[in-house]
Image (cartoon, rainbow over all chains, first blue to last red; front, side, top):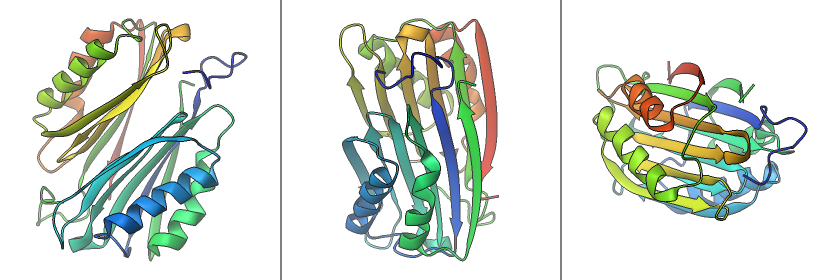
Length: 120
Length: 120
């Protein structure tokens, strides 16, 4: 991918895994699409495409924003007020910058965060 | 999502992050699509859609298989023989079952594996 820094070939980027408990707006596919756009903007990433699937009116939503810098995925379990997100961005982007906007949008009562340096 | 086990609401599944170094076939979008299909089959997951983008004839490929059980993503850096994959599957699927088939397909000389239980 063109964004890989040539001086740091094996540290393409950081990958943040977010688990939100007690979260809101987990069936609303339009809201979720806007959330992915805001998360990508927050870490200055370029969206190539967003693909989302709804499992029905009261069901979860699953999908991904494919980025020039990798991806942001989302999978929601509205029956449990739970959503799993992951943000992987390479180059000069920082996945951590998406955390606060996503918390503001989904309003979890509790968040688990794990960060993994990919290619390190 | 319908696959969430009702008796274990906050352990939706395992998420495996794979870094392959010294890997092959990293510019071949058709090969990569087949690899995602084989990985999904290996963990008995259902593909909803595969979306891949190529960054040109000698460039990387980035994209995702969206699964009924979550996703498999792939991002390749052919200039560094490096590929980052992640496999997140919920319900009775096990993401670890995709590792060996993916290693066979991309033939890395070295693999980093991290596993995270999501929602735990």
